[in-house]
Image (cartoon, rainbow, N blue to C red; front, top):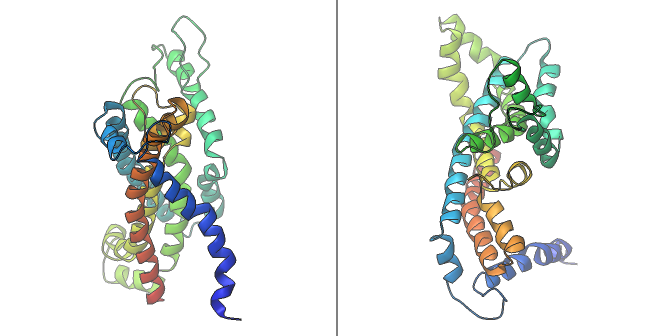
Length: 283
């Protein structure tokens, strides 16, 4: 039996569950609401000419920048602080724990944390209970833009920082202690050791984690859907796609949004794959 025949089951599954749906979605993106008539690029023109979709694109850019900065920065900070300390395992477990919670569950938890009620009513949200307990007026955390978008990103960062920390911590432990000790013997302080030796050696891993977070930011949906459902100017591309498909019954427009999202994600995935291959070649 030829070796490539062993790949047929996997190729069949990829064809049925990946290639076929992708081609179907691309085809639908060129059709009208009833998926009967060809409308050319009308659905794509709608995406780039409508305020709500452009706002979703803008919010995704904010997600991309802030989520990457928060998770990579926080992960690098925790990986460095907890490296080779007595309580390392326990501390890292606490930071990683949010990733074990479903994104929907995390969204529900934080929605209750940010819950708002009028000043003359008891506050059910933890943060507003603290705020009113200190004598201030309750804050509409999730209703004011751009604060609400930043808070949604902070929730996502709370979940994903543990992932970044684990990956960066593994790379950090791969750095030779003798190399760091030699720098200290030569008179370098801890900040100089980190800036001139540790961080440059971590750069390939930082790049991989960053591209992973970029993909995560582009695909953001669960937290936005659960906490605000895209209201109050928090819409993102994936949420806009869901709204067009299921709320407005516009499969053509929804498919066009899905294709645009795919086109945004694929280049980042290619960069990530190339980095993985480059690292494997070095090993």
